[in-house]
Length: 211
Image (cartoon, rainbow, N blue to C red):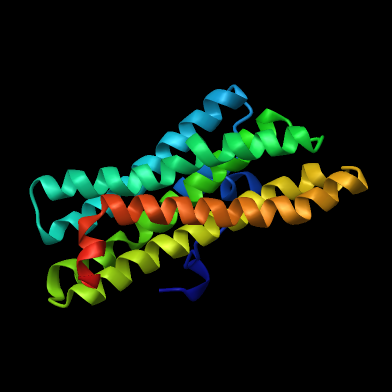
């Protein structure tokens, strides 16, 4: 067989258009969708984030099974939902009183992205949490794992919320920026306290480790 007659397949590099075809679930969830109305997009992102958070709650309920799955799924979701339902409207009032130039759409987008990121983190940690919940007998360890995951997700969500609002606040007057130096940390501390309180009251498996 003549070596000159051997055909070597040619590998063509992928074009930029072909590389851009792949888009992860997280990219689709967090990236703005120009074809959707802004409010419907924020609502879809918010609902998806809450659903992802519920999967982590159901994971915590695996220790008891049965109705505990629904109870813990609802508890984790309730803790996340209190932020856009209670804390964000109060924060919007503070911004309005301080005459900070942040419109409702920017606030809604920052909120929905924060909830979505929290849901993604909790859903990603759910398999590892399930391993601890089902196999570890020590209730204190389960409490630490559960609260640790919730605190991590909350911290990343708070960072996302802060970063998304830095752009609109960059052009704000000096007085408004001074107000935000105090208002933003106070808001994030309030949301953390509120969410942790709800989780403490609604997630029996986490409170069991301290008894």
